[in-house]
Length: 231
Image 1 (cartoon, helix red, strand yellow):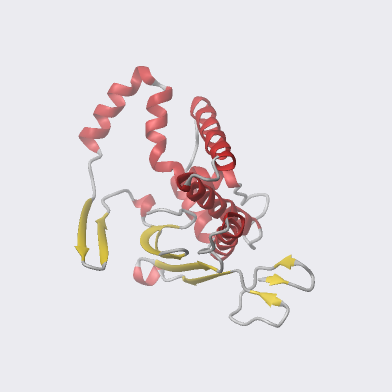
Image 2 (cartoon, helix red, strand yellow):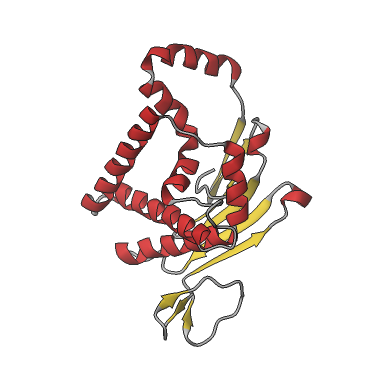
């Protein structure tokens, strides 16, 4: 919410507001993982449909704040389960990559693609801000916006590793193709909709799953993880 009187944003665990509060984002969380195998998360933002870039961008940021705050404990568990560590070469490449994307977000405001990338960056930065505002965040439990990006970038990290260590790329690729093939997918197209089904074959560290809905300009429902904005 935004307290209009004090001109400040507040994260509040409630379904009611008062006259001085303007709702900016909502997150609904059912921490049902231990009972059902999934947490259920619904994230929405007022003004996410707005055609004005700055207004829409802030809506994504507010949605991320709400999500990061409400799911902070699970985000931390996912972070620990994946044991993220990045080599020096890879860290430099990723930092340059982030710089490239941010440059285009700022300088290509008329490009729909980079506008959307900017929205998603705002969502991740909001998640980091919400995590920092949560009860779990302290010196021993600290995640930055860069960490949240790494969490979302994890599936691409293997390609960056091969690029930064090209002399070993062939052997790494051979091992990956021979031992790590997994997952099944089904796509069903209907006259007014399209459905995707994905069956994951993976390691135990990927079992902290969320069934997540983002209600922004469009509604996207997917299987995913805490702190991650894509399936």
